[in-house]
Length: 81
Image 1 (cartoon, helix red, strand yellow):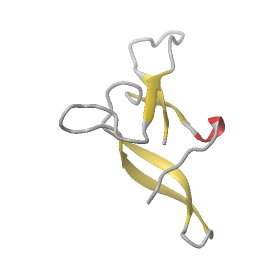
Image 2 (image 1 turned 180 degrees about the vertical axis):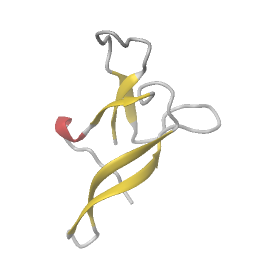
Image 3 (image 1 turned 90 degrees about the horizontal axis):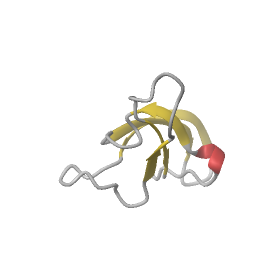
Image 4 (image 1 turned 135 degrees about the vertical axis):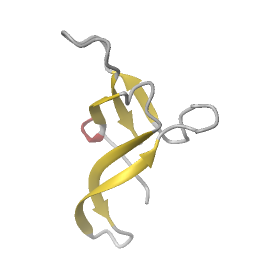
């Protein structure tokens, strides 16, 4: 499968530990097959970082969403694929 988030609104926002520490993410996304048929919403377990050096894998962009009121010790983040 190819996970693709082509617009600002298709990125994934707020998951805990996503910005800096998560190695994998459970991504809920529409599945469009090779013939262009929309197969609905599915869960995908997506690797984010190398298990060897923790660097982001090709095509993955993540970051922390910044300060939050009352829960700044949590690494809430965003991801684009």
